Image 1 (cartoon, rainbow over the protein chains, first blue to last red):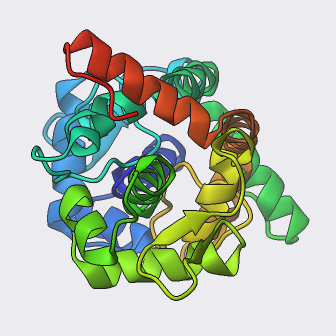
Image 2: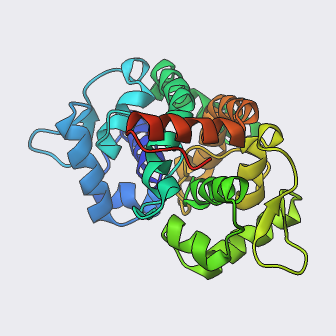
Length: 148
Length: 148
């Protein structure tokens, strides 16, 4: 996984699911610690996959399903624009002039396949609601009142 | 996983384990598709963890154990300089001024923990010899003679 789109998207979706007053891209960006254009890009990807929609005639977003039904696998696939869960990055430019260089990428893809399929199964078993529950546990442990 | 040190190191170790004539950092770098200083950095990390050593009075490296005994987990830990296998990157700068921002990183670390521990177990069960075997299969499928 080469970037933080996935964890940023989960952060964003927790805000969207939990906020009493709808939040704009700018407000979400401040919480995530990025810029509003990055949040709008993630929002575009999540809209395309039917995870969220813009609120009609108003600012902000809303979830198109209950958090219990939104799997992390679906979030991952939406924002990474890939079908398969990708766990370990492969080096991009092995030499075609070397027998090892020619075969290393398919060989390692194969070696890592079981790990990636297992990760995919686990992401399919986890939902946004599980993340929200973990957030509440963290808040309770640090004696902060829940945002609910 | 934020970079390609892991797959580059596996590539490098396959070359070290399989080469009839010891290869220099420059030769390894050409095959991996990077520069020699990056290879020397990886070699330094692998030496520090007792995976390889320089050849006495000669260029090149040698493995300090048979490929069957070198787990991918050990390679991962050596070159990433971490104990825990890290599967999904977390965004770095969530806001401390937001209740979600304050708790998102520990919450997601917790959510991803099972996936990361599972990946670690699988990397512990895989060895450099498994990667070399996959390479041979790839070569055979493409009708290239094995380098052995």
